[in-house]
Every structure is written in C-alpha cells, then in structure tokens.
Image 1 (cartoon, rainbow, N blue to C red):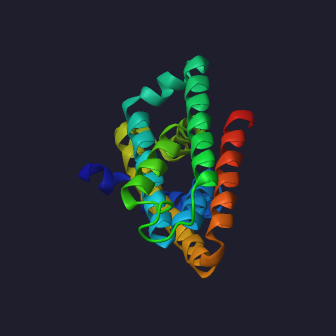
Image 2 (cartoon, rainbow, N blue to C red):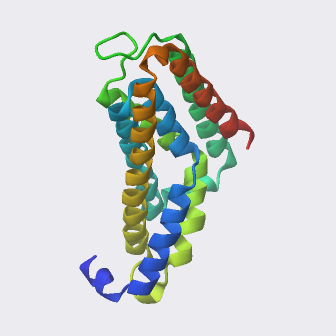
Length: 207
C-alpha cells in the first residue's frame, strides 16, 4: 500500500476527493437517514447514525476490493433480495419512530449511540444501490499502471468513506441541533422522522 501511495498521481487523488465531496454534500439516502436520526434523537444520535452509515460504506468498499460486489451485481436476484430486506428494515424503523414518544434523555423515545450506529450501518449495508455505485464510480479513477487495482479501490474507498462519513455526521448533528430547539414538539419530529424512513424504503424499492 505504501508503494501505491508513492505511485498514485496526486492530481488524480485530488480530483477524486473533490468529486467525492461534491457527491457527499449532495443530500442522498445516507444524509436523509442521518437527518431523520438527528431529528429523533438529537445531535449525538445524528452523528452516530452518520458514523454507522460510514461503517456500512466501508463494508461495501471491502466487498468491492475483494471482488464480491461484482459477484453480487452479476446476480439480479441477489440485488433484489437485498433491496427488499433493506426496504423492510427501513419500514420497521419508520413504524418504530412513528410510535415512539418524545426523544428526551432517558425517556422511552431516546435513541442510544450504539443503536444509532447499528441502524446506520444496517441501512447502508442493506442498500444494493451502494454496491452498484461503488462498482461504477471508483474504477473510473484506477489504472493498472499505478499498481494493483484492488489496492487502488481500497485507497479511494477509504478517502470516499472518511469524507462521506464526516459530511453525513455533520448533517446529522445539524438536524439534531434543530430538533433540540423544537424539543416541545419532539413527538411531531418523531413522526417526521418516521415519514422520512418510510420515504427511504419506498425510494429503495421503486427507484
């Protein structure tokens, strides 16, 4: 990997980082998930959900580097199964959020840090669109002449995951801060979060 860092063009890495940041800053399913989590549980929960989303992204990068993502993508039935499982999970989160009480500290509606991380990880890990995105985006910035392609995938994936995680955590924290200012309406915000989770489930199935 050290040899790759010496041979991989700095300009190419900079171009990739800029392109990745542009994509990360554009609100997508990961940002919507962290935002919904922040609205429900506050800044800490929003950031934790963003971290979980990043860990799910790291899993997808690992699968791509190992060649397993290409294997999954080659079997439409596998992608369909993952999509429906992911949609069912998001729908379950939507119902749980809709039914939960105010997300006050120590209350029944409170969302623990580990729970938020776990939910973010599963939501991203069970999104087949991420598999296809990684396979389509990262290889554009690789070249066998610069070193082993799998190492380039790991390098680029690490950069994209770190920047994306920080951006998503930021969105989650901002949403959580906004939610805290509306603490008297937390029951309403939980329902808003539930609608957002349900919307993500529908998007995953029908897009």
